[in-house]
Length: 160
Image 1: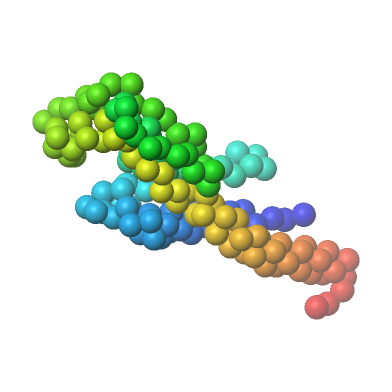
Image 2: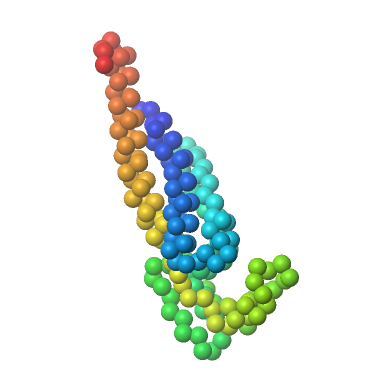
């Protein structure tokens, strides 16, 4: 059976996943400078009968999603079960800082000591993507089936 429409839908849907991730970043108010939203890239790849979506974003996006327990004694960190990744823990009182780090040294020190509260956005994006992809694949599958049946009818001397 020809699956041209299904394959095309799977490849084109990567843009929806990218858009959903950016939307959820905005909903979680993680858009201070816009760097995190601009860093999200989804690249599809197909091998045989499998389509994979490779998601990349600024590294701190994963920490924003799962949260990180600070190294200080007075951190009230509670992991969020909606986070896609397990929460991490800072072991040092400061984040390794270089002049090109996107935030100041006092901010890096504060984050390392106090941690980051989890603000999950990845799971919601994936759930929205799954719903959208399910609808689109049903439509694409119907078109492929119609095309296959039509070509079989014509091949056997019928008319459509």
